[in-house]
Image (cartoon, rainbow, N blue to C red; front, side, top):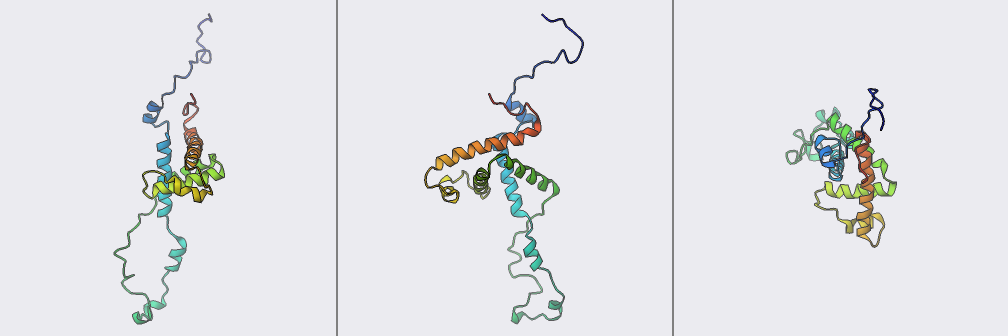
Length: 177
């Protein structure tokens, strides 16, 4: 038996066993559902981003104010006819942009083909599907058979993405038991 010493490096205890439920409650661990939810939010943020080209075409010149004629199809002074029906998209905040970029950076852990599969699956979930339509994704992925194979490939790729997302919490974040 070793003698007891007061030196701090001699009294290092082993890390306690990893409990994912406790770590998730404390915010130190992200499950597959958490990562998938963040990716869905990131995709929805990209849909809210302004379209720079469309806004460039909406730049108002000074001549329509002087030569306004509705008979020739010039712009209406009261805006487009369906302006009330057009939903107003809230602007993205810096926090939302940072979270979106962080979530998309996690995807670099997967290979290029797997990133494409993840993007198609997350896009389907972001559109409001309850489950990923694997049969519809076969054609986009160039697969004739094996929707279940796509699902398993997605699971393996998302495991890599989850490991990358949990890397920021330190070495005790992911348990490979």
